[in-house]
Length: 121
Image (cartoon, rainbow, N blue to C red; front, side, top):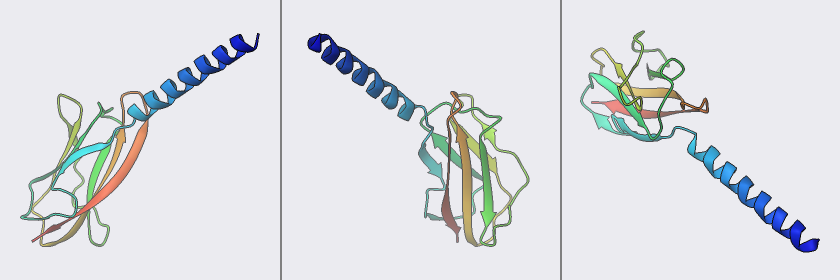
């Protein structure tokens, strides 16, 4: 009886660990961005953030704000055909500091968010 209980506990632990690791895979994380975080660049025509998971376009967001927190555009980001890259077209940005803010909702509904700063020369 003790042997069966031990085997049952081992199986339950393995299943639990598998579920936890699958849950970690469900969150979309930034794979790359243009401009890169903390980069100093010429004024970009667009800001792009690429994630490691497929996104829900209607729920995912990308905005860019200036140093005072004011949005630089009212445009909505576009999601590429692979559903992993959000692109926000921006007007000609003046020299200064900017912050890109993103919300990524993975195809299974898990939500992550973050931001990165960049400087325009």
